[in-house]
Image 1 (cartoon, rainbow over the protein chains, first blue to last red):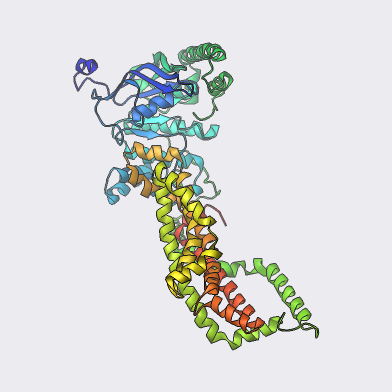
Image 2: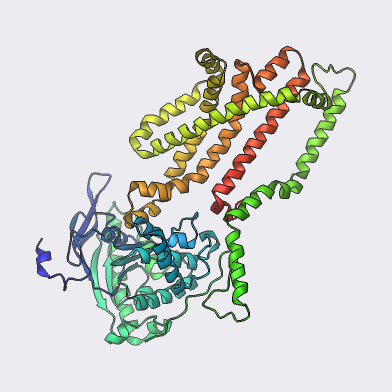
Length: 302
Length: 310
C-alpha cells in the first residue's frame, strides 16, 4: 500500500479515506456506482461535516468508515493503519435513537460498553458521570418511552460516546427531531464536543447545521457520490474551536458567503444530477426529493 | 472560553418531570424530598408492577360489570326456560341443577381437573420448549427456514381428530398420548410468533450493535430475543387457550381419568347436568390459565406495559 508509507504514525491523521469507491450490482446485471473516488481526512480533535443531498452515498460512506460495510475499492485508515479494526472502536450514531425499550436510560447508555466487555460496575460509573454532564441526571432509571425525543437522543449519544475510543460518526443525528429540539441539541453537541475533546465526523443535509458545528466542511454530490468541495470555516484559530456557536453566527458576512457558496455547489450539482436522472433509469430517488432534502432542511431519512 | 451551556430542559413525553432536572435551580425543593421522589420511582419498577398485576382484576371489576350483568340475565333466562314443565331435564338441565351437580360431584371433578391440569402442564411445557427451539432454528438461517417452515405448516394440517386415537394406540391411555396432542396443538402458534418477532427486529438496531463490535450471539441475546418476547407472549396466549381444548379432546378419545373422560362418562349416563358441570369447570380453568399467562407477561415485560399499553 503506497499511501501507508507516505506518513509516519505520529503525523497520520486520525482518519484518512483514500479513493473509496462503492458499486452495487443492479437488477439488470449492470453496475450502479454509489461512491466514486472519495477521499477525505479527519484530524484528531477535529469536527468535520460532510454535507450532501439525500442519496449521495454519505451514509454508505459512514457505514464503511464504521467498518459495517467494505468498499469495492480504496482504503480507509485509522491513524495511518488501513488494517486497524474499526468495529468497536469507531462510534456510530444513527439518526434514530434506537434505545432498547426494555432497558432504563442508564442500561441503554452502557449497552456499547457491555458489548466491549467493560465490567458492569465501571460501565455504570462512567455512564453516571456522563449523565450528569449531559443533563440527564435523575433520569437514570427512566424507561425510554417516558423520555422526550431530545432526552432519548442524548441517551443514545451517551451510549455511543462511551463506546467510542477514536472517532464519533454522526449520521444525521438530529434529523428525526423537531426544529426547536434540533436547534437546542446542536448547541448542546457543540459544547459537549468542546469540553470532551472528541473527534467528530458529522453527516448532514443541513448546511446550517454543518456551519454551526464544524471546523471544516466537505460537500458531497450524488451519482456517483464524490467530494466536490472542501472548506475550512473562515475564522481565527482560537475562534474556530469555540462552541457553541450562537444562531447569529450564521448572519456574519463571511459565514453567510460560505453558506451561499456551499448551497450553490449543492444546488448546481442537484440540477446536473436531475438532468442525469431524466436520462438514467437506475435511480430511485427523484431530484425533487433530493432538492427538498437540503433546501428544506427537514428531508427524509436516507 | 465560552461557558458551558446547560443542556436543554425539556418536558418528558408524559408531561411530568420525575425530579426537577439538575440544570435548573430548584431551591424550593429540599434534597430529601427529591430523594424521596426518586425512591418512589424506583419501587414502582418490578414490585409496583407485581402489585398492579395482582390488583388488576379488582380494579377492573367495575369494568366487567356490564358483562356480568348480561351473563346473569342469560342464566336467569335459561333457568326460566328450562324450568318449563315440557322441558326434559335430560335434554336441558337448569343452571341450578348444573350447580347442584357440580357441588355434589366436587371431589370427583377436582380429582379429574388435577389430572387434566397435569397433562396440560406437561404438554404445554413441552410445546413451549419445542416451539422456542423451532422458532430460533427457523430464524437461524434461511436454509433452516425453508427446510422447517413447510413441515411445521404441514403438521398443522393433520386433523388431530384422526391422529388422537392413533396416539392412544401407540402411547396408551395415560399422560403421554394426552401430552403429545396438547403439544401438537400448542407449539405452532408459539413457533410462528417467536420467528416473526425475531425477524421484525429493526435492522438499524442490529447495525448499531455491530458497530459496537457485537457478534451474532451477542446480538441475539441482548437485542433480538428480548425484542421478540412480546411477540412470543402473544403466541403463548393463543397456545394456552388451545391447550385445555386439546386436553379435553384427547381425554374424550381415550382415557382413564380427566375432565374429558368425566364428560364422556356422564354422557353415557345421560347425566346432562354432570356434563355441563364439567364444561363449567373447564371454562373456569381455561380463563384462570389465560389470566396466569397475562400476569407472568406483565412481570416479565414491565417495560412493554410501562409504555402505556393496557
